[in-house]
Amino acid sequence: MFAGVMLAIGVTLGGYWKSLPAAEFLNWFGQNDQFIVQVIPLVVVPTLIGLIGSLWLSCSDGRARPLWMGATACVAAVLVLTVAWFLPANAKFATKSIPLDQVPARLDTWLMVHNVRIALAIVASAL
Image 1 (cartoon, rainbow, N blue to C red):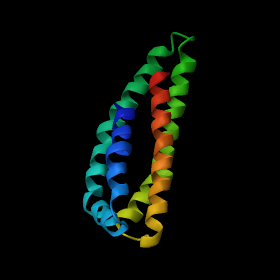
Image 2: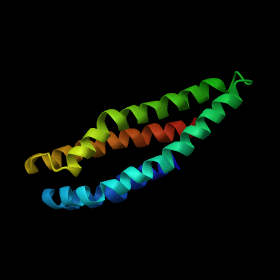
Image 3: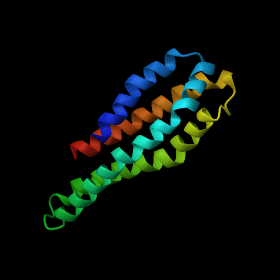
């Protein structure tokens, strides 16, 4: 679910955002950022509950523990990226505090780093 939501954001919203002129993108983001923020807990909380429960259950099986620790590391990396990079970047988009000529490059970077989050979430799911 976690990886799927991020993939949908990257493909659907990312494609749509790139189709917009910079000023329209910033307007869209400013008007809709609260919906993105509201959805995050609906995806992250079940992910963390499932991951913590799986770690706890794997304590009795030493063979599975490395896999769950790998999944935990991937999800932790996604959370660190989200807090350290995406929250500030999203705030700049939402408040239109980025010069219009820098928006396309910043959005490209946003999508590239988002692809890293998607990959980490897929690896976590596979583990």
